[in-house]
Amino acid sequence: MADGVSADAVAAKLGVRRAVAHTHLTLLADLGMLRAKRVRRRTYYRRDEVRIAEVARMFEKGW
Image 1: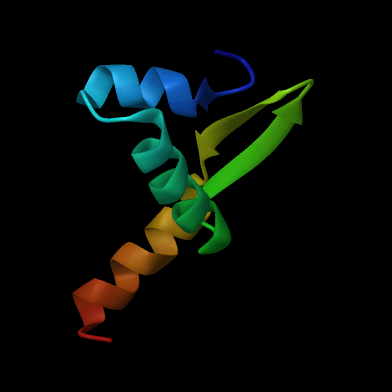
Image 2: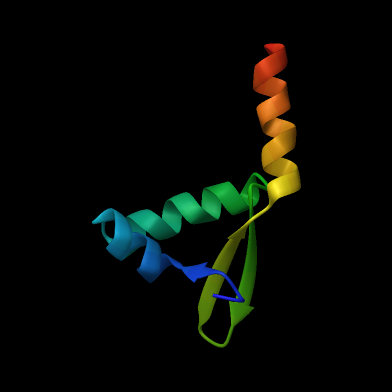
């Protein structure tokens, strides 16, 4: 878990197809909510706590 979690792990936990998890994780990474790290043939995702806090503050302020 030091590198994060894979789309396979997220898909298994949520009970969705890997492609669905991968699509959503990629979107969140593109938005800066997750950090993606490529290790060999897999991509691992970790939360970006600073960015998540920034977005939360935006919602609190009403955009």
